[in-house]
Length: 176
Length: 197
Image (tube, rainbow over all chains, first blue to last red):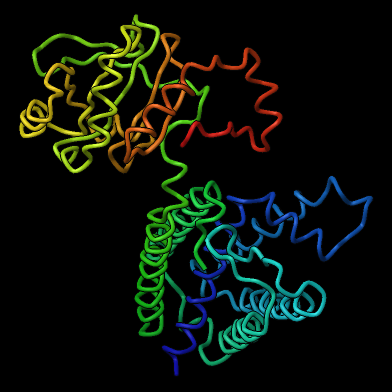
């Protein structure tokens, strides 16, 4: 059970890092998705800032969740983010069916569809699992371990950013 | 304590899996035909400048003092493209304004012999590096890039046939726009139209 909970927590943290890094590499594309959900003419200049904020928040949340697993309130923030993803999947399916969600920047061409809703629900479920089961003190890490995990987070972030940047230059060759 | 160790182990494994997955996705996507279409350098961009000895020890430079320089990125596998060989022979015999250089990615003694057998023994063969190929954004051969004396790319493409080389040569002879800034504005993201066949 512990391994399942810890695996869910680590998986979500890695997913946030990959998604955040990929979004940072293609902020213009992700800003277009933000615009779909907040179609206000007055906000036009702010879409890129909003997109940047979401991407940076994902990166910070992923890094924190990976490096500070004992901090229990981070699990609740990840759960809130997971629920937000699920909600975005549902609203996206209802209003913008078939359009690219840019959840992983240029790394993926996933669209708002039924499997997307299931993925959103799965993420929320993983986040819920990560909030229970293992007490914070049980996963308290030493500074060397935190540095190791932070380094791993930076590696994942850098790889994700670089790959998404490269794939963004080849619009028709993005993988599904 | 056991939970902490388990978390570290699981997290490291997942990070490694994520990195491997991203490499896999990128490799598959970048190996596709659409990605290869974007190889080379876009028309109007500055080509790498270099000075290297050819197989006879003569120092060659890029850009050339001649009006045009044709960089042929290939190796001994050129024998599989007889039409490309024909195109290179036609160009070599047709104009004195063009310097043709065969650029190898690495030391390849067989390539010089094969080029001689193909009737291209007069062309200088320069041994470059994979890094130099990278600066030209060339991954697949045979690839050709026309560079003018100002060091600007005039045409660039993967080639399989003689007509492609001739078409690129005609494209290379079309002068570049004098205002690259306005060209960049016309193409979103500052990208120039590729001089590809």
